Length: 518
Figure 1 (cartoon, helix red, strand yellow):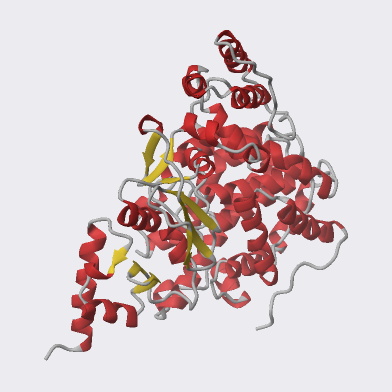
Figure 2 (cartoon, one colour):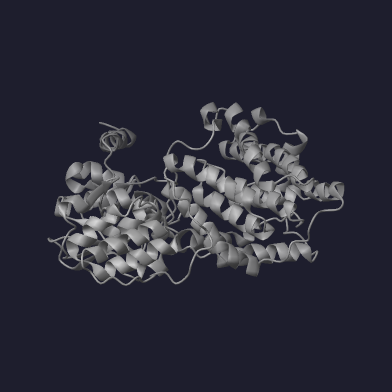
């Protein structure tokens, strides 16, 4: 008789066959009842709705949302294809956001289909599908992107309600900037006789600095006999002029986010102290605060480290071969990597204190920080040497976050633009807050993004003359909630206030966060 572990192995093989075919949304019929119940019982499957499942990790905490958020878009695509065949589309608003790379998981996903029943389908973790019986875009105005059926970019711009433009200004402007010529939208405007829509789009294009496209829309519609009155649907005008030849929506999105958020940051952050007079004294403080910084930064990431372990790793008194406990071994490797990276970051701090451009310094040095952070794990065989090669080459997800970081192909566009923004930014507070936020928003590495973001933040603090600031593990929930609000809702206020409060405390000489006694 087969042992329980052998039976589970059989069920896992059946699940693996589905995964090798790229199946994320698993119907009941795809697995035998025995396999399905065994995988559910052992935590390898989660039920989404009756008859539909997704693969899961049995070590996930109860109620863990990460698996669902990571599977959301693939599940919805498969489920909607099963229900409606090819006769469905996401809304024009959601289509625009996806065209510009915004894959944040929505609270409710609106789906159009002539077969819809105008009903809500509850999904896990306070998400849902709402299918509405509405006409689909014409055949030539549809597009499939990563399994999702969307309005084409021109069709979505025309079908979007006016409220979308001020409410989702960053996505709307990034989408408009993807249009290269007025002819992309004029054919649809003329075919539908959309004089009011033409006026709105002309105003929208002028708002982002595309005067030629705006003028072409107005002239062509008027020449065709339509009375068109230009109307700007946005509630403000960006100070940023988007380059007309920029091909990447990702670059435009990061520049628009930066411009949109910087004023809020400047209003909330304490004034920069200015150049540091005594560089050696500043560096001594950076050295003295190391144990506190390492304890809190590693603890935020879930490592269980003690001051004694951090000190042993720093002084070289720890021998990895003597550590037989796997969890303790990983904790110590993380602590060793943090110590090595900290030394590299200190050199970057010294450069910016000496007057080097902080954006250029971080651009040139951050690869060294990352390699030092993970070299001990490579040496120990925990991760492969290829993981040190550079930015990630696969999708990554953030635990319990509705923010879906950009696909790895987009990271190659995002990162040079990000460092250009840091290099060009003259306001220290903006480099500090947005430097940290945008870095973790992009999530350029498979692991270590939080630690790297906090290192970057402290280099930017030094460039402004602010003291090195530790983010306390006790504030982790507030910290993560603030990053979530900025990533998903484009609201930087909470994150700016959180960092400003910690930095103000350091400026006032209040004690650094506590490290527990042994």
